[in-house]
Image 1 (tube, rainbow, N blue to C red):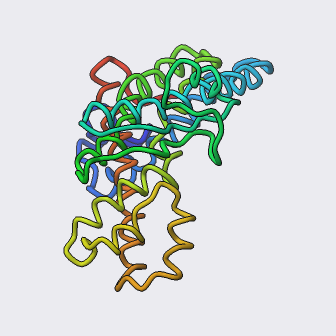
Image 2: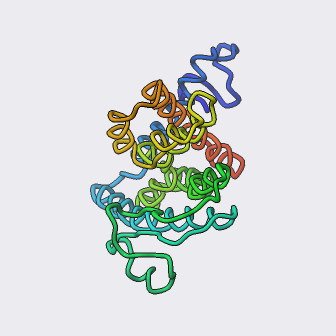
Length: 254
């Protein structure tokens, strides 16, 4: 993953020297933002393209939200867990889905949330439940974003944004929960009280709860979970970018 203008294909600078590790790391961290900004620039050739891109974004988000939640449930069931309540707002088709799937309920405090499920006490099932929707980032997410950018298709580019950038959009939710699952494997925070205080798919709610918690080192654990969430988000994007590259869609260029 290289910065355009600084590094040529294959990771070699114009001088023939390989880029320094910190430069390569910076380029990798910048790549999602660069793909988004450069893709947007390629798709906005005409004045009306901004409205078309925005329409695609709204459509993509409307499709992605219920699909994301359904994949949480599907991953839980596939891993051996149980599901009895999946809340999806009527705005995102919750009423229609509730009429077809017995454990879907129209409503709730969020756009969508897997509110009733059991992992049977298995953290691996819990992790699989969290990870399920992000298969869409691996494919078609990043690939679709880059392909739409290369062809200058504003509608498809907007539609692909929620799928490609889902790990970053999920930082206050699923990404934090994945980080907290990892942190609570450590001996210092592996007890039931720590797991109850630190785990959750709403980082603001977890933080509020920690102010009243007596778990030792709770804020250190919380900060570590946030760092792991960030690392996971970039890693997931990187894997999606790898898949896209193997399918012929490298980083977006101007």
